[in-house]
Image (cartoon, rainbow, N blue to C red; front, side, top):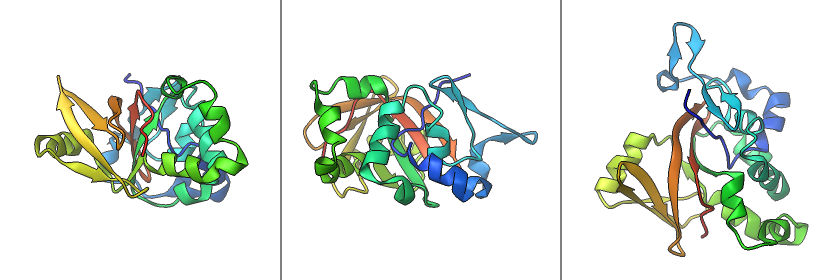
Length: 193
């Protein structure tokens, strides 16, 4: 099975588990096969298309930093909505590439605005598959994030790359992790607005 990561919206799963979004509608693109869900493994956990982004993300051992950041930013309720959302979910290793002390500083209450800005820079309104992203890359296009700033989309050697506002680049390492409220694409670098 392919690995999959549901990230940027990790903390919302707790609220959703209690709130009951698990019964959200599943679109035809969610890969339900013969009455069984087609799951992808991310961070050692199955990602279920019938669950929302947060419900899946909290189970990924590769996204504990993202989940903690979503909670610290107070985005659980916001990100547990119906969407759809396209989330570029940085792994714990991606957060580990930041300068020492950055994550610890960002999760402090006084830095909530900066953390929220970074996290919402990883979210795009709508459901965009890897095929949609490749098509956008061929057109030399950009995506407008929920944060409001653009991400440039390019393709190299069959992989989707995102270039942030500061010129940093992140590669999509796991694509098309379908969720009830969107899709997650795991990325190897934290994007910066």
